[in-house]
Length: 460
Image (cartoon, rainbow, N blue to C red):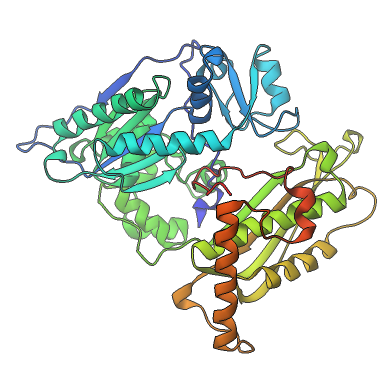
């Protein structure tokens, strides 16, 4: 599947105008061909602009109008997870290494991320949107989709509803929280439309402007197509939207080598073709860049343990079972060794390994597997300073398809499941340190809860 390099930090934030100014509110309806009927739309997609940075400017008046970069921790080796439009005017964007951001924008103000407040604002924004129409799906911390019904579907009514949603967010949550709204017949195209005019845009893509309006885009403008996927498409002769749109459904499926290609074809035609209800997460992962004082084997292991604990809780929340576990470790090395430089600006050696499991979701089995992986990591000179840890649970199977282990009795499995549910409920209510392995104690402050762009975490 060529969409596997989708990067949550990629393509989420718009560029500023070439002269460095912030565009004023924009609204666009591509000129439709003559039609006897008023075009109708099915989806309204809301995308908050520069969300983390905008929340900081809304909550802290002294930051308004100033270039700010939101970072996971105050260190030059980390990267910006968000940038205000004032910082974007200097070229700073999501993923920019802090040291580079300081060079681009000497007066940039670095703000340590406050994930609790971003979740709080998120819920207030959802409430504001729902005062206009129901939210059908929360796509990420800063995106949500709403299905249009009945009188909401005609083009003019949908545009008016889009304006109402945008103004309601600013009235009820904060004037510095600007949003871009996309309207289309498919949820995917509504997302595309929301990215076409930023910040503060309103774009509609009714059927009668397709495919013409899409020809103005690049391949990278489509959600799911990042740098790696674009390169693979180019190698297969697809270099523009025109090349992509010439394909039929079968060719699109062959191009991607999976059903995702066929779905994309339907979505780009404007068909309201949703994911199958049988779809589920294929993997769950957590990663963390270690602060300098945590870069020892003992402390890195504590962080790996905590990341697994968080991943296992998510696994059980989604009623999934893991059939393999992976561990990734990045080791920092002296610059004199000319090692590849990571996206965090650190010369590094990387290592990754994965082992198969009998389908499981209990901490005991997963911790045992993680121990095996940890002992297999490289040792010796050049591998004594871990700076990055990543844990993944893969090959996920939903409850209904889970096969009971031959060595497990049904009673034992049910008892263990009830125990895990009780532990998870206590941890979610009172904090992750309520019931956890003692080996995690060193990691509590080092690896705090982070917000993935594609999920809204429970704040343990």
